[in-house]
Length: 234
Ligand SMILES: [Ca+2]
Ligand SMILES: [Ca+2]
Image (cartoon, rainbow, N blue to C red; front, side, top):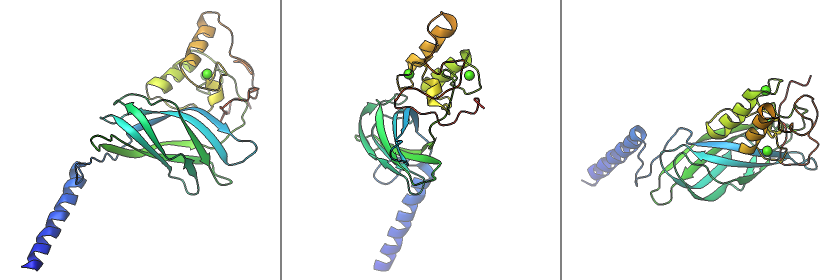
């Protein structure tokens, strides 16, 4: 009799696991979503010249799950790379909304070219959660570039302003050179960079600061941004 009870329990347990696999509903009511439910929006990326392999990033996350989230966990999907901190308590971020700026320290071994960031986010009151890979970030610094050329095609025009706003608000691709997108040279890529560029292109506003939109050069400012990859300066 005992043996049959054990067998029945095991069948029930296996049934629950199968149900969880099919529906995404885990025992205890937790829901798992195996698709990226967060978008990582980098606003700055800084290389520590005195400490190779040490980087600092400021980013926001956009909640693309179907429920609010208030806790965020990040970890590196790349061997030997650590992220710190790895957990944040967030002011509740509604579905489709954005978190505030979050600062992340990255420590990578010599020769590491990129870090792929995995994340999970939770809603404390219901236990709803989601997880997935949110971004692969190149670990590169120190390029020359044209400021304003956010889409890195070698010229500064309306498509660069669109590129910045598309990235910030519509899930568009991340620029490969944050310094180029930072048209205000204040160390952050945000809406003011799109406004500054449109103002320069169409309303006679001041040109983006050095190296400017028409010349190649390094960033003269000590700020929190670096240019990862820019191939249009020969
Ligand atoms: Ca361009
Ligand atoms: Ca800026």
